[in-house]
Length: 169
Image 1 (cartoon, rainbow, N blue to C red):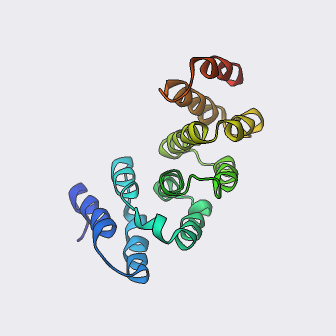
Image 2: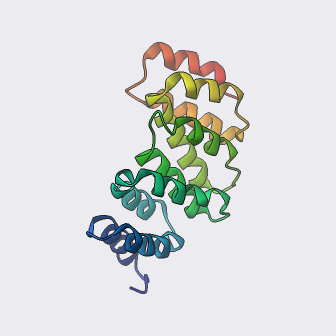
């Protein structure tokens, strides 16, 4: 595909998700796909479909983390949404919070993805995420948006939502 059209890019990402293939072959397709992501819908739709990442967790976790140094807005979002969607467990939460805390990019979709990921971290690991939010060095927009997203969640108690208000900047 020449990826001239949104649908072609989306299809290429989804084919990478659902076609049966060995890890090495899949890596080739994913590595070619990620630099072509140019909007949040393609990123989020495809990445949340990448269930294969959970089957070979160690390999894909290491692969996804390499995008932490990227300056490309959607490569960073790819990493953030991948971490949130496939690796948010006891084994990875501390490293995910560390990675989220180090992201320094002015792209709107990076900031929103990071806030979204932090809100999901809070739902699954409230104590760790609250401790993170109490001392993070995130920009104000991302920090406050994460708190807003947590407060909008139906999976967070009213009391917790009220307590989180005091953390807004």
